[in-house]
Amino acid sequence: MDLVLGMKDTHPQEVLKKREIEFKLRHLFSSWGFEEVETPTLEYYATLQKVIGDELKERLFQFINREGKLVCLRPDFTTSIARKYSSDLIIENKTIRVFYDGKIFRYPSSPLRTESELTQMGLENIGDNSPAVDAEVIALAIIALQEAGIRDFSVDIGHVGFFRGILNASGYSSTLQQQLKTIVKTKDFIALKNFLEKNPPTEPMLVSLLLDFPFLRGKKEFLNDINNRFPRNHQFNNALERIRKVCDILSDYGLEQNIWVNLGLIRDFDYYSGMIFEGFSAFSGSPLLAGGRYDELFGIFGQDRPACGFALFIERLVEVFEKSRPDINQTFKSYTIFYPPEHRKSVFILTQKLRKLLRAVIAQEQNDVPFALKLSDGFKEYTWTDLNWDTIYMQIQEVIKNG
Amino acid sequence: MDKLTLCIPTGRLKDEAIILLSKMPSWPLDFNLNSRKLIFEDQSLPWNIILSHPKDSSTYVEFGVADIGIVGKDILQERGNEVYELCDLQIGICQMVVAGPENLTATDLFRKDALRIATKYPNITRRYLQEKGLNADILYLYGSIELAPVIHLTDAIIDLVSTGKTLHDNKLKIIEELFPVSARLVANRISIKTKMESIFSFVQQLKGVIGDE
Image (cartoon, rainbow over all chains, first blue to last red):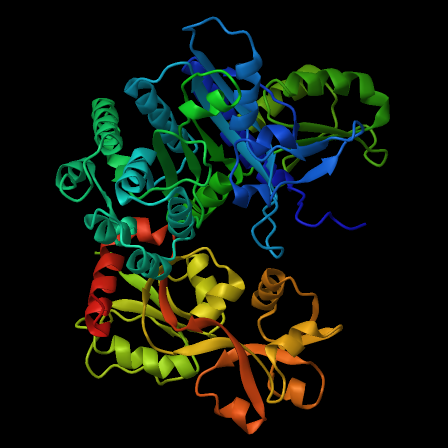
């Protein structure tokens, strides 16, 4: 029997690691007052088509359902959550704090890749557009990576306003603006140089600024050096002021160590409208988390609500954890009790008591050990021939205590 | 600053790349890559160096085993690797072209009912045909592409041409130029953040050598 192309089975060892991380993050998000929500695996193409970019559209799993309508496996959660909360009757001015954990589906960029089904866990804060919410969301992203046991990570913070300000100052037609956006997204700076030579922007400083795009990164103080490099318009001013405020709040939280300002940061999803951020580690070639503010997404679904959130890629967290901390061995002992069938009743009571103390107890009937009880922890074996159940229970407790 | 791992392709591009790199101020004197080793990790070197097959260097960089690398634009177009393309090294210069027998015109070629094209670049060829609105069988060959029209295996080829001598010797000519090709400096998308200063200074040095800007 063949595995469906692009899909994979996950072995118990890896599932265990995923669940450990999910358990910690679920606890973290709940303790900050976020409630878990579920959305369906399927969405109408008509819903997604309004908000996702062309590149992602090509990577959707889609098919026709019984109604004859085009449906898709969800490529992310944010769109589904925006759909849900823009059609819900919500009490005005009430903030919604939700988190989710589940699978998303995207065809990989190349048919030779396997990453088609990913576990995403993330949260959304809907209804509040203050910088404090931006900072809280980023803070939770940082704490989530720490809780997951990731060390040596960075979180880059940017703002879509910087690029929008550039587009605004370029004097380009909307066609040229679109072309520029596509080139910057493909990260081809030779094509970018040729484009800028062929289409000189009305604001000449944009040329060197755009060509330096990957290098507009530094600590908070970097924001003081950029004033004369960017065209001064309201998009730029708003973005700069916002990033400053968010960074100040994060400094108050004592989280500046992992934070970088990256003004050249661009996200694949077109729905972001304000602050954006990405978390990564040198141990993974792809981001570990990504998010930002998407105040315009709800508007597309017919109800204006500000919102901000992020998602973590759980499999990548496991990968980075494994690579960066090979010292930590996460295997757990499981105990097996072999017993003769005639003692089934007593052994059942015994194992139920033991399962309260141990992570895993397996009871196995065995005919060839008459009148004896055997306990194995995978390394050592213990045997009892005198079947006094209270004594056995006490002696097993001793065994556990000693190792 | 963090030490970078640099991927240099073997083959034709290697010699040109090394001439260029050795002009950089940080290149150590009397260092050569002419042994049979593929990995150079030495305290005295400013970078770690990996030598790769020319078609593989962008993959090494995409997956982060090298932070930066040198790779032909033809490979980037064919593979579509997710990397930053930082500068044009202006070496390994050639053209990606459609070529066919001397007596064949573009109009004749595109009017053929059962069109067949030989290439080492199936993805570039498929995209080209799609843009032209043409349907053709793509024959993915490993070598001597220019032989295919001569022995009537295919009607035309899509391949790299530098001097045009091979085409001429096989009585073939360029029917259409697709895009210019040269070697590029590419960077891994995470390294460009975690090792930004090192990559920035490498690019500045290299641009100084190329005479760019």
